Amino acid sequence: MTKEQDERVNQFTELMRRLFEETMNTSEMLTGEINIIIAAACLPKSMETETRTERRDPNIREPVFERHEHQDCVTITTELPGTVSEEISYTLDGEVITLSARAGDITYRAAYPAEGAMQKSLAHTFKNGVIELTYKKNKIIPKEGTADSDSRDEA
Image (tube, rainbow, N blue to C red; front, side, top):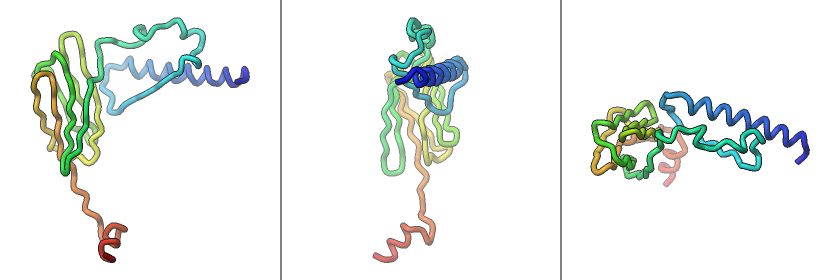
């Protein structure tokens, strides 16, 4: 790359780093997910000596989870080691499930997409540090005159 291209990459990388740090410094639960990967080769010289622990709170973690879709419902299974049910809270807001839990000094936070979730259908079970969140999906009925209904009429 030319010197001008290097400078543009460095400016962009610095902007992304600052935006990411500002986002991570807020104490609010985000209703989405932010994934930023900055290659080490593109880091400005001023950042090469910084460590990851200086920029991230090690006590806030995103839990490990699995998502399974069934015919009319979705189950999200999440590991929350060391938590008790009284320290877990979750909500379904629109099409996003937010989950927060505490285990001693550790806080678990996550936001999961819940497209087509029926409001007030979110339920949970919790056992041995594993929570299962289950919600029902809205049934989508094709409108008259759409391509789906036309293809059925022809058959």
